[in-house]
Each structure stands twice: as C-alpha cells, then as structure tokens.
Image 1: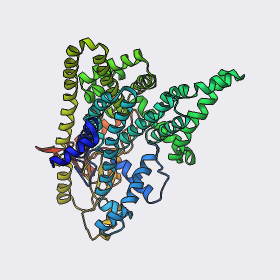
Image 2: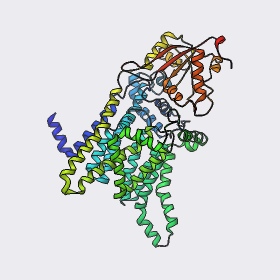
Image 3: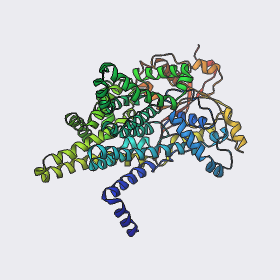
Image 4: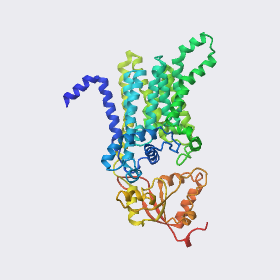
Length: 553
C-alpha cells in the first residue's frame, strides 16, 4: 500500500497528489449519508418534483409541463435512468421504466439523482481548481478547490436530486472555457463558453447572468477583429452589437432553447409558470415574508452561514482586490459576482441555494487575495506568510465543521416514518385524509394497483393534497366546511408549512383561519414530534367531528 502511494505521488507530483486528496475529500463528504431517508425524499421536498419529471422524460414524455425550472436537468437525469436501466432491470427483476416500478419503490431513482448531484459537486471542485490555476496560479486553484470541497451549502445540495449543484458546475465550466477566449486563443473558446453558459441557464434561469462574463470575454476575443473592420470603414457603434450577438448572445440562446425546447413549443405554459415563479421571487413565500433587507440577509445569514465569517470577510476583500488588480478574469468574474448578488438580493424569496453559483467564485477570490498578499512583499514574507496561513486555517475550520455536522445529521430515522406506521395501524384503509406538504409517505388509492401488481397490499387512503398557501390569495383547499362536504375524515398537518404560515399571519389569513377552525371544530388525535435521533417536522393528525358540531358554511 505504501509503495503504491509512493508511485502515485511520483506520477502525479506534489500538486497533483494534493488535488487528488482534495477531490477525494470532496467526494467523501458528498457521498456520506447520500442514501438517507430513502425511498422517500425527506432531505429536500423539491426532489419529489424534480425526480418524477426526470422519470417521465426517461419514459419519452419530453414536455415537462412544468417550467418553474428549465428542462435540461430533467433530461440529464432521465438519460441517467436510461443508462442505468439494464442494471436496475437485473436488480429489480422487472421493467425499471414502468410506472409501477417508480411508484412502488422510488428509492433507486432518488439515489441516482443524488449521485448525479454528488458527481457534479465533485466536478465543480475540479473546475474551480482549473479556473484558479488558469487565472491566478496553482496555489490559488488548490486552495479554492479545498474550500469548495468543504463548503457546507455545496456539500448539502450535492446530497439532493435537485438542480442547483449541476447548474453551478456548468457555470464554472462556462467561465473556464471563456478564459482562453479572453486571452485571444481563438473564437472557438468563446463559442464553447457561450454554449456552456446557455446550458447552465437551461438548468437554472438565473444563470442567464453569465452573459456578463461572456460579454467581457468577447470584448477581449473580438477586439483585434473589430479594430480591423473599423479600419476598413465599419462603424464601431454598429459593429460591436453585431459581434456580441453573433459570438455570445445567439449561441447562448440557441444552447438554452436546444436544452429546454418546450419553452418555445409550449410557450403558453412556460409563460404562465415563469411569470408565476418571478412573482413568488418578488414577494417572498413561506418563511421569507419578513426577512427585511435582502442584501443584509444574504450577507449575514446565507453567505456567512456557508462561508463562515472569516472566509466571508476574505471574500469581500478578494472582490475589492480583484477590482483593483483588474486582470481579465477579474473583469469577468468580479462584476458578475456583484451583479448576481445584487439581483438575487432584490428578491423577497431569499433561499440560500440561490447563491450557490457565486460561492465558488467568492472562495477563489478570497484565497487569491491571500496568496498575492504573501507574494506582494518578498522581504516581509517570513512574517506575512504565517499570518495568512493561520487566517486560512481559521477560515477553513468553520465550513469544514459545518459540513461534517451536516453529514452526521443524515443518520437515524425520520419522524414521518413513525407517523406513517401509526396511521397505517390506527386509521382504517380507505379513509379520506387531507394532507399538507412535508407529511408522511402514505399510499393513495389511485396508486394502489401498482402495489397489487407487485404482490403488495399496503393500506391505501383517499388522499387530498392541500395546496401550498400563496401570499395574500384565497386558499380554497384549506376550508373546513368544504373538506367536510367532500367526505374528508382526517386532516394531517405539518409544521414544515404551519410554522411558516403562523410566522406571517397577515400574509396567509385564510390558512391561519383554517388552523384555528381545526383546533375549534376537529379532534386532535395524535401529535408526532421528532425524538432523540429523529429528524423531521412536527405532525398533527385531526379527526373531523360530527356534522352537528361543525361550523356553518
């Protein structure tokens, strides 16, 4: 073993071996606990939206009929299902692309999605190394890769079958491809970078802001051509827009549409979902109604939470340093980071994951600043270098500890599994249950035939999903009188919704009134709270009382 390690070290060299160690650390942190909660999507509820769309794509239904996200991630994950289907067929002894296979046991499909995110997360660490090495030198690249490897926000979302880490990886690829273009190494690099930026946008809409660094790279890449054309009589005011459209904007748009074609082919549905998504971003939703100043919230809560205070301070200094040094990558990255942060901070929906695309860049700018400060005054290096090393160690400890804590949390069971078992033992099959999001995974009567075909006979219920409450709008699903008229026997509530609604009662008056009516006119039969070693929300099961005691309406 020692001889093999020695041979690997000599083959890779010191920097290569260090990079290998960083990538191994990144992969371990992203794989630890990756199967937690399966076959259910307890880690992130959005998995239950993304994975079914990807499964439908694998079955040939390419129109997602859902445009809150673009479509490329659905196709990537659907393609992975197709590639893995022979193995799944052997392991499951049945068609893995049959709807019954997914309904009865969705665990393998969630797991493959999570593994895809873990792979893209590890690739992101490599890409930020390449980006740093190309622009600022190998030490900056290695340090940036190390910090991204242990970044808790990046580690956490690399465990989830959602779009964010994949989009971040593609955005880093776009920037890496644009660097040679900015240094005049050929227009093909500019085209490749614009295409990668379009693909990133086809995973997350907000990465359309990659048009900024792509435009900066295009200015450098096309400057010689523009000078020649101007010298032969072309007007610069007309020439530059044409060049930018031809070399950046058109390729980026074509790549976006090629990867999300139903944006055009189902334009009406796209416009509805896209505008509704922007409305949600603009007014906040379920927990983000009273966050106050978005700029401060993103700094104090979101960025400080993932970078740690020390690295966040270094990142701010790194941004200032980049604006002072103004290398070509500085002019590509620093304005993009600032504009992206400002844009996201104008939203009311301030989820931390929206900042993921700039987290690797902030880490890179932070460590680059530290490296160059050491090199700035060679005579003072003996004093400055140890201080900078101590500062970087301090900056490393906080995110690394948070990532370890996240991985440790992916152990034990979830309270929703205990609630599921109790409901199946105590509520008769066939009962009608109205349920909120973040509840236990009950079997619905509409899906029962899939279980029967598989030789299983679980208790099944008539499930009515309570819609997610929308700010300031009526909530027809949360109406106790209506539920009684429709024959609902039980209502199952989750603190994952209720706590956020009660924190903003003026925004969700009908939902708050519904909770109040339940307490007054329904019988609370069971409360489930997470016990030691359990994760999950508080769940409440209500039984609707006889009609004689029900409110009029």
